[in-house]
Image (tube, rainbow, N blue to C red):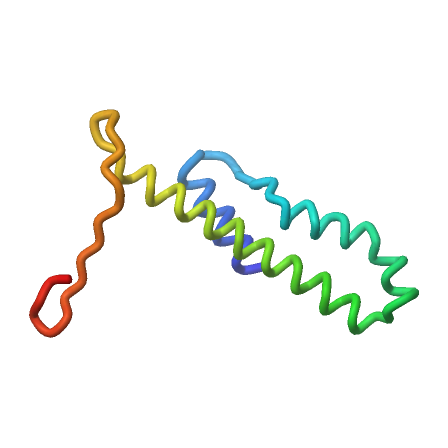
Length: 96
């Protein structure tokens, strides 16, 4: 839930609207929620709940990664030309 809220906040800051990305993982989680009553009767509550919560967590993480990468890429465009992302780290006084 927290990951999904952070992703929505980043999307809101970027697009000035709530952004819900329709990935395959989101759609798969929706199908799993739709099939919950059937899975519950066959697999039991504990296994079904763990499966659906795991799918929802992975879906939220995927959406967060996609939203964050798009924000980083947008910040690197200058004068209509894509500049890319440049990172530099210092390791024992040397730049890598």
